[in-house]
Structures are given as C-alpha cells and as structure tokens.
Length: 192
Image (tube, rainbow, N blue to C red):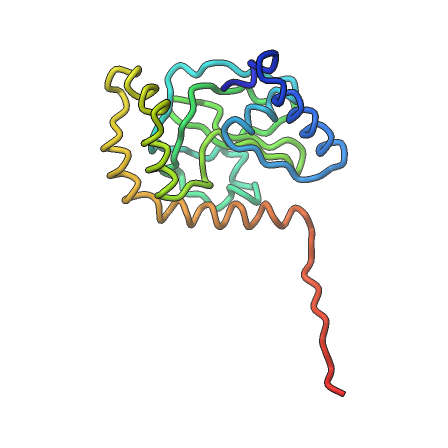
C-alpha cells in the first residue's frame, strides 16, 4: 500500500490525523517504513516511488546531522539494515535528514526533537523476515523484479546481520523511549 492511496484506503487519512494530533500534543512519534511515509506526508512532504525497490540487507549511512542525534549518534559510518520498500519521501521542510543509502537518499529524518521517521526496518527479527519471504504476495513482488532480489541471499544475509541489527534496535528504541521522560518510581515497602 502507499500513503497516496488514502482515497482508496481511508484508514491512512485517519493515521495521518492521529500523527498530527500526537505532534500537536508534543508526544514522541516513531514511524517505520509506511509509518515514516505517513509522517512525511502529514508534514507536507512528497511521497513517491523510489528509483529502485530495496528488499533485503542494504548499507545505510548516518548523515553529519545524525552524529549529534540521540537515536542514531552511535552508528558506524555504514550499517547493514533490513529494508522492504518501493517508495520514498522528501525530507519535510524543517526536518533533519539523518540517514541515506546508495539506492535511497532519504532513509531517515527527525522533525523537531521527538518525531522520527525511518524508511528501514530496525524492528524485525529473523523469523519475521522468513515469514515475509513466504507470503505469496511478497513472492510475487520479488519475482516481478526480474531476478534483482534473491530470497536465498536474503536468508543467508539475515544470519550474518541480524545480531548487529538487534544491537542497533535495542540502542535506538531505548533512546526513543527516553523521549517520553517517564521515570521509574520505586516505592520502598517497610516491614512493620
């Protein structure tokens, strides 16, 4: 699905309205893949087909801006990240560009201090990737690309890169949770 299908899929408009309401309340917002595209469109940026689909493991590099970002600041100059998308977005007018790849120049941005949009998938685990590769619709999509994407290669690369992806996701999602400024409150119980 595409964020540009909101006339056919009205729930997308509902999601963009909820994103807008969360931003007005200064709540942290994180969008991944379609969610990132929804954030971009909510902020007035264009969403359109990428020049090539990214399905599998790709190098993603942080921008200079990302070096000072709490979520992506510890990334290496290039990280292998799992992708599955055919569309991309422009960076919103006051957004901060945080990551890029050779095939997709806009991989991530931050809007304000607590709204993040990631085109890539940090949330996946090995079994999820294997399930995605078994979905008939996904198999048709891969086959339509004329051999550019090899599912067996994705299987092999998943075993190589999933551990580092989990390290990155733990770090990034841990920092994102801090944006909620929820402090643990401990109550000491006393014995009588």
